[in-house]
Amino acid sequence: PNGIRYYEMRVGGGAMPRPGDLVVIDLKGTIKDSGEVFVDTFGGSKKPLALVLGSRPYTRGMCEGIEYVLRTMKAGGKRRVIVPPNLGFGENGADFGSSVQVPPNATLEYVVEV
Figure 1 (cartoon, rainbow, N blue to C red):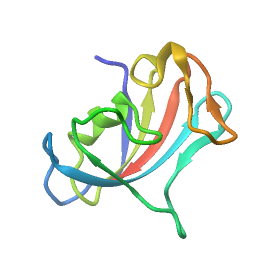
Figure 2 (cartoon, helix red, strand yellow):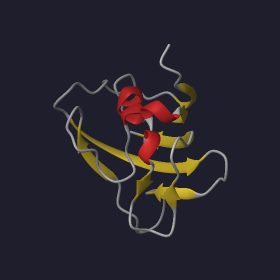
Figure 3 (cartoon, helix red, strand yellow):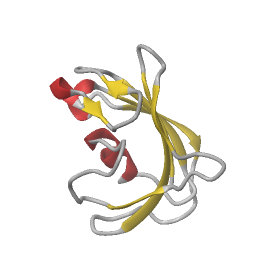
């Protein structure tokens, strides 16, 4: 109903996180139209993102749509997620200080692993 679509790449076997839980995730976010990557913590020396579920402001590259999907993921799970602009970065877009900026009203595609 909220426009988020996701596809299970791997179903986890652990517990689902609850608000207030510390969650450590790997995240790769791309702008769906251009394919430009604006966040990627997978691989090599990159550090995963640690966040408290339900806390604001969001950590780098995160958006409301990803938090929504995390609530139903289990530890060890991996999903491909399509986030509509209203649950992404909306009318303002986003600038994470890298060479890639998320334009206004962009649909986002993520791979997220808990």
